Amino acid sequence: MTSRATSTATAAQEASASDPAGTSARRSSTRRAIGIGWPILASLAAFLLAWQAIVAIGGYPPFILPGPLTVAQRFVRAWGDGTMWPHFSTTLVEVLLGFAIGAALALVTGVMLARSRLAERLLSPYLVAAQATPVLALAPLIALWFGTGLPSKLVITTLIVFFPVAVATMVGLRSVDPRLLEMARSFRATSGQVIRRVEIPAALPAILGGMRVGITLAVIGAIIGEWAGGDQGLGVLINISRGSLFDIPLMFATLATLALLGVALYLVMVLIERRLVGDR
Amino acid sequence: MTAAPGSDPRFDASSLAPVLATTSPFVPGPGAGVRVDDVSLTFRGTRTVTALEGISLDIAPREVVALIGPNGCGKSTLLRVLAGLIATDRGSVAIDGRPVTGPDPAVGLVFQEPRLLAWRTVEQNVRFPMELAGWSAAREEARASDLLGLVGLREFARAKPSTLSGGTRQRVSIARALALEPAALLLDEPFSALDALTRERFNAELLNLWQRTGTTIVLVTHSIPEAVFLADRVVVLSPRPGRVVAEVRVDLPRPRRLADLDTASVSSIGAEIRAHLVDTTDDAIALAETRAALAAAVAGGRPPVAREETAPGTPAWFDPFRPEDDR
Image (cartoon, rainbow over all chains, first blue to last red; front, side, top):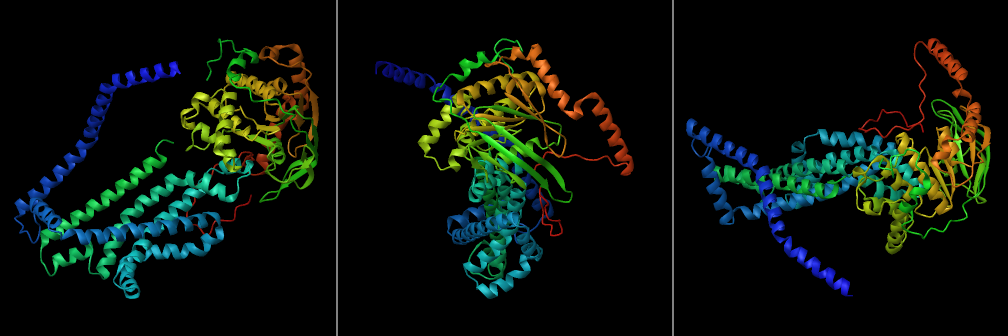
């Protein structure tokens, strides 16, 4: 009892003594963040400067090529007065839902393709053909069948996400070391246990790689869907700002929003990947 | 890994006792008797290969048996038959009188490579068989802790396999094989990837482990000294198709020490084994080379390719024209 009390006391002392060390660790991690961050900031600054230079030298009017400052002002205003938000949230929902459905279907299909040569032979021609046909060309048909609401966007997004994730899953599962499977079998693993505890975890880096590609494609899918028909979303806003509003800075602000959305989603995928397979 | 107590390469097994004596829940078990009755096995694929032919063996509980033979003689195949991973064409295998029809809970298998799951910690790897068997978390935890103590890896419980040396990984895989308290431990050239000195040390550890767990051991090896040091009986197999050529008793007292390896009785037993290993005598090697050269000349300059190990999986792509796998 007494020994435990003393050990708690020492632990507390150590904790208080290590506090300054903790702050210095935090400071060094800030320094590391700056170390990683400065090339990104530098390239961004160079990009904006070049953009401004082109506008200034070419003397383009804002309805052809607005300068970065004009776009930034329009960007802030569009977000401030509530123009952007409803369109942004519509697109975000389409992207996330479409990606989730597409990736889930692709995962199941990928497992089937990896398991069965017959399934691969039956399905692969259609999968490849569906991928080779531009979704852009299919979009009007899909809008005709599914209307101009959320469902048609989800179909297009799902379609575009499906292929890379399905192929990555299949390739990932086929590449799992058969020696690991034999090991699992020697411990009487059922086929369900083999899939869940060996094959999927082993193939996870490949599957997540496919999902990284998929999430950026999902944004494209949502925009295509909105162009084919719809009354809200960033794709719609691009059309409105070019057509009825003739507000080109708003169009650029929307494009910037789209780019930021894509980058953010990609980074989230990278973080998930790092969390799941980081320290193998 | 090579930091053996002292730097004497011939250090003996008893000096490992402090490492291994951290826990004592391991009461030596009775071990399992293994009976192999007239087993034959032929692989039919693009090329028909008879791997085993009329093999009979009777292994007593707690016996240590080493299977030795030239490359491709079916040693590893026989071990997989015992483990229930490969079905026989003819004959039967029984463990403690029960016929083997699939992987048996009374058998633990250690492969040539550690075959650990890279995304799991050492402890989680050891718990893998218990998870498959549906143990409770508390029971898994207690058993894993005992096993890691047994192989001296308690402090590595949370390490990932990629941070460990080859020998340490193989220790983890031995602990994993012992997870479900098997009555028989089958080892397929378990230390062949280790350097010679580390390998001797691991052999000593294995004997110590055998004394503490009381399992029957069947071991495939390429090394005559290893076979003699570990086994009560060395079974010599012929080149393909594998048949039992000889069974050599090793009547060395136990506990054995690595220093025993250098005694005259060991080398005379080793010489007896070598005499039975038909293609490892100098004459046989010369003959085999001549034969291979002749065969190559007949086949149009293409030397025959012998493959025993299965290659790791190759990445696949959509390819409907790929021929069926012939396994």
